[in-house]
Length: 157
Image (cartoon, rainbow, N blue to C red):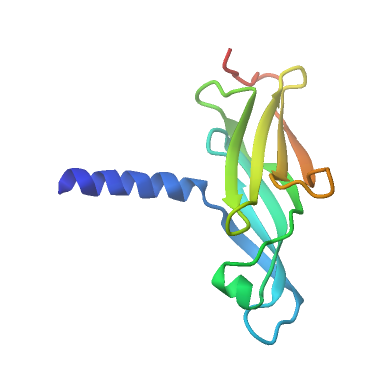
């Protein structure tokens, strides 16, 4: 029983690290039934780079489908990542890694955040996109966080 409880707690902790923290929202369309359509802003802490947080804004559909979790949110998002404390990278990180993913439709669409390392400029580059293609080109947004050159970013070779 104790082993199962510890396993469950470990899984819940791991899952909670990958969830976004809601920062705020604004209503964009009034709905008579169900929640309004809105733009939400979430914070995503990079799980492998302490001191960097990414703020993502995206549309969230309301109405009856939105209330039931059946609405398909638009594949548009904006991202701004910032240094929010001392940047600490305890172990080497890959040159490219998905650091966050969230389902934004019942089955087919996900919002993703990928971190890339620009070794030449000692900069962390973050890209957000939806994995569903819109009119032949995925909607995306990019931001970058420069790291002090005195502390080269450790990358996996």
